[in-house]
Image (tube, rainbow, N blue to C red; front, side):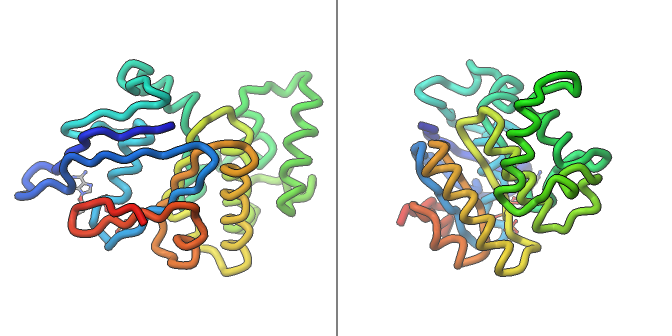
Length: 218
Ligand SMILES: Nc1ncnc2c1ncn2[C@@H]1O[C@H](COP(=O)(O)OP(=O)(O)OP(=O)(O)O)[C@@H](O)[C@H]1O
């Protein structure tokens, strides 16, 4: 379980904090969606729970352990997987190599792993020939599926996504949300998605709205 306690944050010259004394918990096996007006602080919140940035006040605990104690680098490397709108794949590699690199599998040996990755990509409609092409030759929807399969296969408890369907059409968005549901319901991860898309927001297990500087859990 990921727990946020007493989180307060404000930026530099801002006259009011973005939010104050936020307490929230995120369980495994669930998809959480976070919605809120532009500028309300959703991405900032994700950066704290992803260990990319530190709030002015407050603490974040993973299974009771403060992430300050886990260490930011260790936490980011082993505990969280992040899926951004712009895919954040390594652009000079194939989809297959992106995932093998994240799994720290070298080219020699590990044939079993390689086949497993290819099978996983195939399960989301990415055939071996495409998996071996440079990722930039894949469509936006395909690249997003690669990023999610990578998040699925690395051993991270928490999967965080910022507008993962932002550029995608309806069919690709539906496939992506199904993958997030599988990550939570079958792979037992905690999935936290920021979205502007009301259809995506309604398909989570728990919807959180950031309104007037308060997180409201539906
Ligand atoms: N590094 C920064 N320094 C100063 N202000 C910042 C910084 N990052 C974000 N802000 C401000 O903090 C507020 C919240 O930004 P944030 O990106 O978290 O909002 P958001 O809800 O994700 O917005 P959007 O939906 O438009 O992506 C905004 O007013 C933004 O301008």
